Image (cartoon, rainbow, N blue to C red; front, side, top):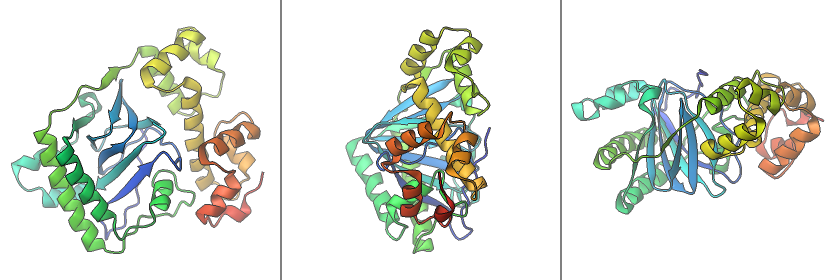
Length: 307
């Protein structure tokens, strides 16, 4: 499992940002982190894979990702928009003192799945309005949306103009959302993944599989057509799309690790078969080439990048 360092400054007890499909933020690899994560789906739908199960959450869903739960965002609908809040464990221990909130201090396993609830309209608007209020004083939403996953600069850290206000807002959000979680029953949205699909996800996510999809299917002990059909049906995205999303995520990671390398070198290191393949997928995802995307993001390393 990949432990993701969220690099939260000591002055903050967590952070909050708005994630959107447009502009298309880099895809996240399977990972976990020390912080408790909370999502509220505002519109569209988002799809996570955790362990042997796939979950698709529509608008109005509140969902929790606990420390040690390895999770992967594998798809978002074209109009998807969801708030993501994270809370430091030390903060949770300090503010959750009664038995009603004891579960928030626990470590939930992957086998327990993703805890979630579908909110009624009144509860949904209460949480959304609170999150909108906490966002006041935060960095530009587009910047947070772009950087919160795989930032183009490795030293990026969350910032807020009013740390005390943010921390107070996070306290309110945590207790409000937990009360609503207990008020609304968990929905049934998990799909049990076929062993061949599980194996394909594991091999691709590990980043060691650069062979053909035919070889992947053979390793999973099924035919090409069967694996492609089954993967799309169960995960919700085509196998090639999923594979290229992982490569794009690795591109951002490689870019941070090797700031002086060329785009071509980074693209090959991420697993792309050619620069033209990478460039085409990058433009499809971001609406512009990598050099332009880095320049618009204000990356200090942008001027060093070339084909």
